[in-house]
Image (tube, rainbow, N blue to C red):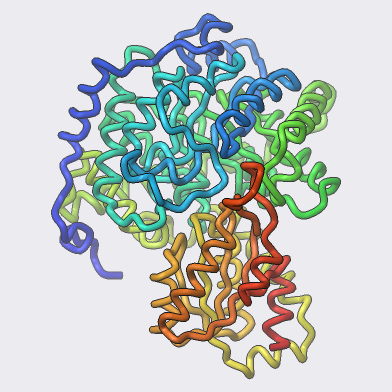
Length: 567
């Protein structure tokens, strides 16, 4: 592995994070946290204060997600869900187009999330019921980080993120990572200068955690984030994880270790959504399996995290308010039964993993910062540290800072290995032989930041003898068409999730046609989109429309592999 080079990482020069931090802090003279119904109901200055009170009294906290495209619909849902199950906090799913600066937002691709065009719209939402507002997705880590953070503060939010997205997310048609970094540092400065405690939320699964092969590396990434936010910026960070933590023992062990690495109250524990499939009934079993671990962890050693009963329809569509309520009622019932269940559980195996994780995390943090320092990067400048990590990427960072031989394999990596083997086992010997003999060159890509399907296909295709071409994550259609042209791949496997399935394929087909490319496009994931001529501002299934373009929708990777073997 070549040594880390400052010139290679920063060919365009070093950003000045200290100046950006000063700019953000100065804005706090005019932008401050405003009161909201949640703060008034509980008589607290911040959600962090509420969380500490809850931890002292062993009160379990519950988190729900909300965010429909239409603000009025989201406002109604805010009140309706509160009336149905009274969660303590809402995670607000902004649309990815909210990540662009407001003056550049017109004409940019949109997903299915919430669009709030003004600070007043932010505030109108949070006034609907006494639930703590948590603005996470597409605030931190975007070029609009400062303006969105200011609006969230004025709406009464005192936990704002999602710093984890900074490291891995990319907005379509936006490649200025320097401005994204400086905007994020300015937003961090604005938070740090508030007179009340505001926590910087980071979902580790949205950052490098889901890419690392070692769970100690993921914990080390949390330690580095704490170093940046607390030591360099002067704020506090609240961590979240859970999407990809399917193994109960390591899920609990990580929660215990994270509370040592970062003693600040956590934001929430996200549901293990990779365990969900097409069956609602089966998904209730998956819901109970992870939620019981999280409830047990918070009941016996609270870390401030709210638990998150994810609706069982999450893998299929944007859940309706009544589906959110149903999942929460199931979670509340499980919490009621918890005292009688706790004596049955032995946490010894999970607790025994904690020292190993902590030692590995500390070593990861030390190696990473030493490597940056040794390359001439100023590790006291928040922008330089953040941008260096982002440009390194998860794979190179783990090579540099990870433990040789691995401390504890990530449950996500284990799960993907098992899934890949299961898909391959469904192919008969003749189909496997046809795939190996064809030597087909297959390009894989994703339309947005959701990478699970793409990574899984890379693993399955390679083991099946296909020649795999990396089309990237969140790749623009014109760039993907150019990758197809230059690589010679004439089969594309496209993963999609954020409600752009049809428009993306249409643009990609046009780009391929302009290059005289004939490409078989297989597409899977959440095949929906908000149509411009629809009478409701909700996504609809676009599978038939995709077929009309000539693309081939696939329900899952097993179907895809069967199709490839038969072609």
